[in-house]
Image (tube, rainbow, N blue to C red; front, side):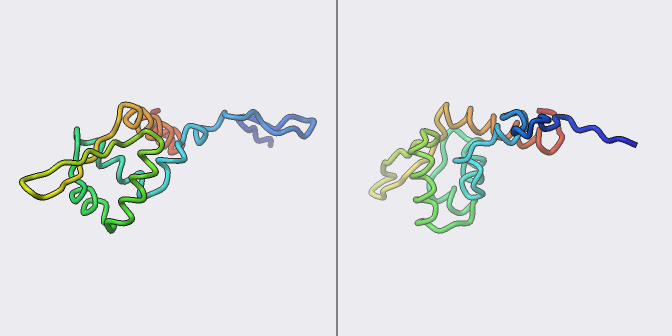
Length: 117
């Protein structure tokens, strides 16, 4: 009885082909659980108020701020500051790059899980 592998390692001991597993499609910035939750929340709307995202993701203001800074640096999220009456507010929105990265990340997760990519 023999078993076959989809992508056996070369006989000379070299590493298998790079990039053939769907995990290579995962985005390291989005993959962190809190950032994934933030991006998933923002993907459902054009924009969302900071407090709404904080409460939905169930993190503190400081944790959300740090994670948003990472997502902003990657170009995935934009923070828009403004006022409602005299109260300062921050709205968060996914950029087009953020939406594309989230969609690609979700496709990679589905491919890893064996679903349709």
